[in-house]
Image 1 (cartoon, rainbow, N blue to C red):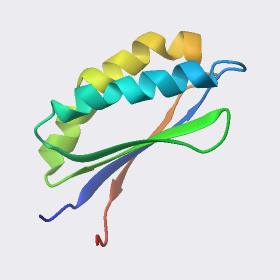
Image 2: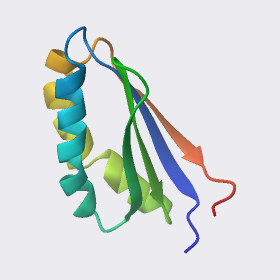
Image 3: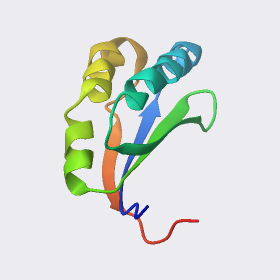
Length: 98
């Protein structure tokens, strides 16, 4: 599989909201599984208030569909309660995969 496209989102939880943000991200897995074009989807914790999501795609149109899909919409709904600041969302080109 030729995975060439990615999305990296960095999230900062409000004080005391890290566990709730982690639970939201864990629940997001089910939404990612339902996306046909998403090859891999990772939710991760950096420290008690920094979290992230990393996704990969074979095609640009799958990445665009993901960015307009249910996970970003759900994040927009919970963001005001859980996030200390707007998430940083970057599209990336994948250079090599093992």
